[in-house]
Structures are given as structure tokens and as C-alpha cells.
Length: 130
Image (cartoon, rainbow, N blue to C red):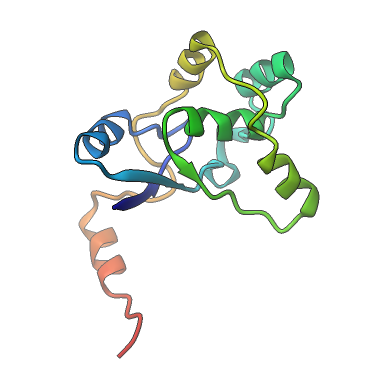
């Protein structure tokens, strides 16, 4: 089973990942780049970590999720960014780096409130077919 949920450095969902692991569910990140919020592409913590590895903040963010066992599907329409997104397999973040990124977690989404009744009504109102 795959559960596609919002997962990025600012909404880590550590408890949800633990439950998914317990039940053998593969987490897949939607919005792994936080939809560009919080200056993720230039964030000082992510950029500083990236500099140690010769990588961008975006690559650090993607690698962080991969190291947590999360499948990522980053979205881009720019060829150079697509290539950059694929170039995350030649480095491993240290435990200290992983912890520094974990500390960026806000503990909630700033993209969509998943627990709000209005959100549930909105999402359940979509029809894929008649």
C-alpha cells in the first residue's frame, strides 16, 4: 500500500511515518518542496547543509525524505531542475544534518488543513467520474 501525504522539512509528520511503517504502508510525499513556501530553495539551514555536500537546498530536502524511507516525486517543468532532482544519490546526510532538518518541522501544514471539516467536505465533493 502507498499513502501519499504532505511531507517536507516544514511538515515532517514523524508520527504518521511511524504508523505507516508499523502497518507496512509506503509513504509517498506530495509537495516535497513545500510548494516553495518558507524559502525552501534558499533556506539557510538547508543551504548550509547543501554546501557541505556540493548540493542545493532542494537536493538536501529531497535526500532528507529519501533517507526517511519516503518515496518522492518532485514536480518541475524545467529540465535543469529535473536533472538536479535526480542527482541526490551520491551523498548521505549525517545524523546531525537530519536532526537540523527535523528541527524545521512546524508540526502542521501551512498548505492545507487536513483535519478541518471544510477540507474533508471539499475533497469528498470531487467526482472523478459519474
